[in-house]
Image (cartoon, rainbow, N blue to C red; front, side, top):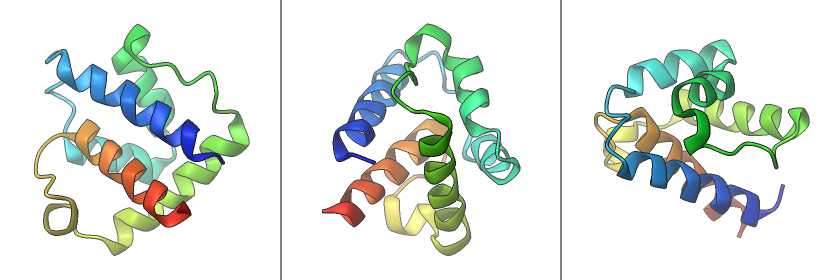
Length: 103
């Protein structure tokens, strides 16, 4: 997976956050969907046209999901990323962590 794909998704989610329309998406709800393996359908359903996942095929989504599940189990998001409330901010933090791991 290319870093440019991760940054594209981070920018897309960041733009959605900036609209202020998605404050209801909590860390808990995103975490539940990551655990269940449904996070991509969940965020696409919530963000609709504010999110473009077209460059992520099923294999890439599975790879990201596995990475995010590992982060959920190993990392305290509040302590490491400073994320306390927003599920979308959590995903951006996970994407930034993924970029750092690939550099």
